[in-house]
Image 1 (tube, rainbow, N blue to C red):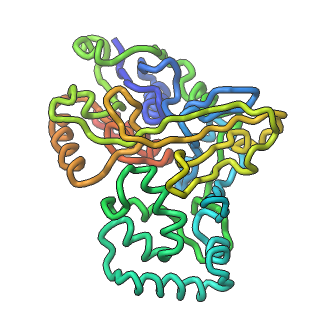
Image 2 (tube, rainbow, N blue to C red):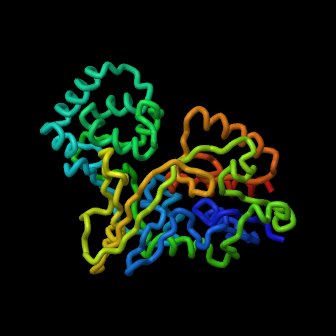
Image 3 (cartoon, helix red, strand yellow):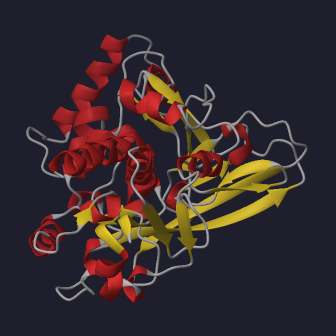
Length: 366
């Protein structure tokens, strides 16, 4: 009999399990995949730690979270500075003075703000009601047309005018010559890859891979006193109310016989015609010096049951459906947590914070 059965060896599950084990609890972690780490999993190819499910850069302003993860890994000083490629024209991301200078030839922040304000007025936007209007209000129509519109269409499979304004609010806009994407005190990537971090988080804890919770569900009460479930909430209930919508990603990964393919870890392709959204060159996350390189092209498409869910479609319809599942979950006695169970896109530090807080809450209630 275990104190906790943790379903999912991703970030939320691994952090919760670590806290419980350090508290003297007996923990079993299961995962239906054949590896730990969830979507943070990295595998070594040609000595390069490849982010199997897309780029993961740890960044946070939460000192406790930063100190927690640094107990289990040494982080490098990687700074996320992606580049946007629009039909061969290269622009700095996040949108900053380098972007505005390349787009309009402006030099000062005041000139950039004036150009954005002119384009917002020309578009007749007073109160933004969707992503398109919000984007034009933030950075003007020229940047929207070249660097946002096509990329967002590919990423979400919907016109920007049909997407909520909240999506684009995550995107930083700076009137400085600062190419650091994240406005965070702490930022980096575990040296040796994320899998190494998870191995230390789960050290001494029993882990069973290739194990599907649905096949243990009926006997879970005989396995552990408490279940912590980090999978999709609608899947837990067998999609009985219908399924929540996601966007998913297909990765086309290739090893190339060159030390440097694109000169940057992340390049976004923002025109609508290029079928992929971005290319990741993995070696640059850890300043690799291998004679070869590994790249991944990312293709976004609509999720269906059986695919890996990546990005929740947080519109009104899905929000209402999730609320119904959330009501059902309250009567189960199970602890639900993580991006899939909460149906929210979380940065990694938020996931760690929520797992730490949840363990404190449940342990205090005992």
